[in-house]
Image 1 (tube, helix red, strand yellow):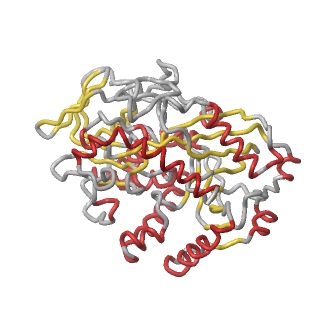
Image 2 (cartoon, one colour; image 1 turned 90 degrees about the horizontal axis):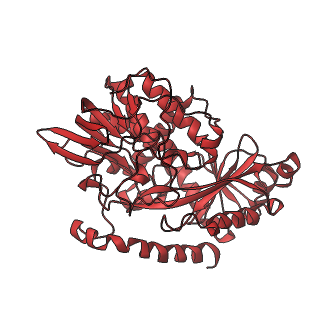
Image 3 (spheres, rainbow, N blue to C red; image 1 turned 120 degrees about the horizontal axis):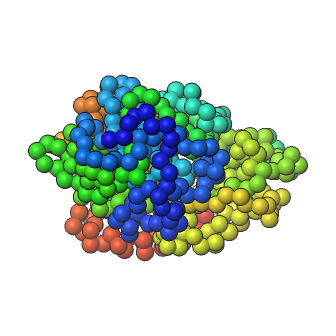
Length: 473
């Protein structure tokens, strides 16, 4: 294994593949370069790592995936349990979701709202789920306080893109205040446009007190330094090509050698391959998200858009837009994208974001786009994550399925997965800690495997329906 004193980052051995599709491509690559995101373009050089695996080796704990979740798992294993993990990454460190997201740390752990938690699990469980998110946000703040990741604190503004959405927002805000003690406020359209931001689509908004914008790559690079300083080793260009378990050990074959481990934590997010292990086959539906960043706005343009906030913003579309004014005065905006990796590079998806920007800020029509990228989001079939030990007889653990809300919650999930790995997960009794990621709908395993290829046909129809709900009905 490489000397832990390596002082450079491992460079790419393959070019970035814009059409990569985790649902179809069984091999995640090896040493593939970063996507050309704003975050990678402005973060500076990646920090040192420990180089690829170069020989057979034996360790206590392996984490697969060197993104937010894998790195924070390694951090908490060391900090709280005295365990120095070995992190395997197929490509470059923080190559997947962690450097392709929107950098919005919100007080959420999946796609469902608090009212939907109550419908699914009842009020008592929903209150505990909310407390888990509040603790997660505090954990996140503590974790990043010594990382220079350009934080933009202050909360989250959830903007009603149509007037008919306001009653739903008002009801949710009342529930948040009265049932959860969470000070969500309703703002009318004039207040939003005059005192916050002149988004022409705004018909009002709900402001929640927790929310932080971050520079995604600077955050990831900070996690890398923190994990290695605590004794973890991080090995890029080391994809797991096969996984065999026998005699209580896991044998993970990489291009450079076999890593023998007592326990394995999986943190591969939207880039989880169906061939990694039978436990993960068809349990996630990777969804593409697109993002663009403009050139820096002039002072006059900022005034015309009436930006009085740099907090994170989202609108109420099902296929939501997420956006904010970055510290260097660029506008970043993102939303859902193509169905397949093959179609992801098509310019029409970037044009859709230009159109969204033009609807919200007509003053910026025609503004130069300097960064454009897309990435895969790990969406579970019931819209909530899982941080579990799926089989108590196997020392396999995973934290997956954030559905686009992993910037903050990945750090809490890393902490929880570290607890599981350290043998201290007995008190993790919330639903997201107890059950496996579900298969699609009511299908059992065998049915899921038969019908899995047709999920994207269903996704295409869903996107059309969501567009009708968002824009027409």
